[in-house]
Length: 92
Image 1 (cartoon, rainbow, N blue to C red):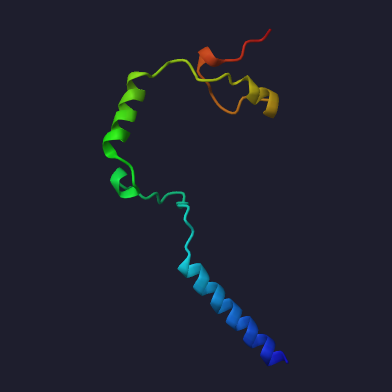
Image 2: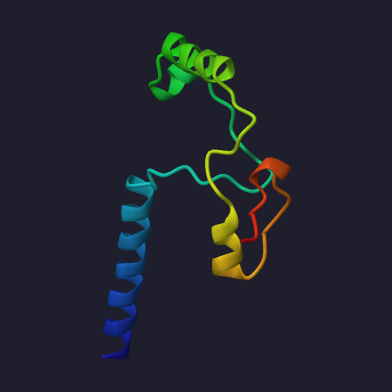
């Protein structure tokens, strides 16, 4: 009985390893200091469209933040980092 259980366990572990090897995770999660660098075309992006989007955003930059940071104080009791002076919450 014990040998049979050990054999089933061994077969299960081998099968799980084969399944994991055959179906690697589809999400890329890099190590903290080991980011991969790929060209846009290599990941299915149109380089011309990506460049156009980047140029559009550069041409339409704003000095104002997109949102109010006061919710940080409400949720966390303090600001989580430095913010532009123009975005500092106003005390009523």
